[in-house]
Image (tube, rainbow, N blue to C red; front, side, top):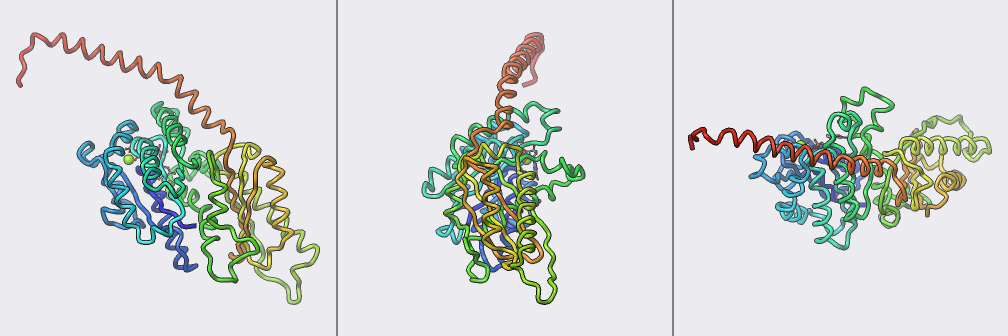
Length: 391
Ligand SMILES: Nc1nc2c(ncn2[C@@H]2O[C@H](COP(=O)(O)OP(=O)(O)OP(=O)(O)O)[C@@H](O)[C@H]2O)c(=O)[nH]1
Ligand SMILES: [Mg+2]
């Protein structure tokens, strides 16, 4: 599958940069293209210049709201991010048109952090505009949810997240949920390592995007996972997972793969990798709530057989009994068996519901504070009425 990737705000831009790197990897190691265009959009000029893989020209690193923000961001006010995106959306749409292999593009992926200002506000606006212009291609939004410490110290974070999620869900074909907090639960050193987190966020997309673009027969499995499978699966609230399992590289001479015991261990390795993928989902949710799912298994071809693929399918079916499950196998990596999973069309996502309830309860207090501020400012202005002005 080939996609155009557009990162909005700092978080979105950095993850889009990661996708541009994935594309270089696919091109140099596999001779295939998975990202036809990589763009970063921001109100902050410094953030744009900090990227490394996205092309350096103004049509790929797009500064919006220049006059309003002076190139310094919107400081967490996502309403302002949305307003600027409305004014400057043509800049982005025009830039997309310059994509060389645009006609080969299957879908759009827009990415932003929900807790900030620029990305959070511009995401739903840009999704809507791109959908209007390119109604024949699906538009997916990847929304990065804030760290817990950000929610605790700043209630704007929760409010921004809630408004971003609600608005984006109403216009995007799918919302891929990525919870920052999940990536530091296991390894707290990652809290200070956003680059590593971004790398982990983008990784599950690699195999999924590459699989359908393979041209060499030896890398084409018994069931090719292509753009059609992905587009049929990815709808509504969506999460992703990725798990690996090591397999020994060396075999003893004369050893056969099809041995009964061997086959047993292969299946076990597969289940292990799928378990890892499910326990490492990009957001904690209940797999049984998903209505569409997909898994891709990638391993050296001699490690893959129909039993393994079937066992994995049965296993996923037991976890997500109501889902239509699509699958593919991708004979590829040496010494490693990996499984990528997408759970989509989730009928319930507790974390999203919580953002909505908490945010709704915050609104009256936020309004009251604002009114109080206005009242206080009025008082101070009144007291100054007998003071001469210099203007
Ligand atoms: N995973 C990841 N999350 C990030 C990164 N940078 C920021 N975030 C998260 O994204 C949220 C939004 O932050 P930014 O992307 O910096 O905000 P922005 O869209 O640039 O908006 P303003 O700076 O307010 O104009 C933050 O609350 C963080 O949780 C990053 O590089 N990786
Ligand atoms: Mg910023």
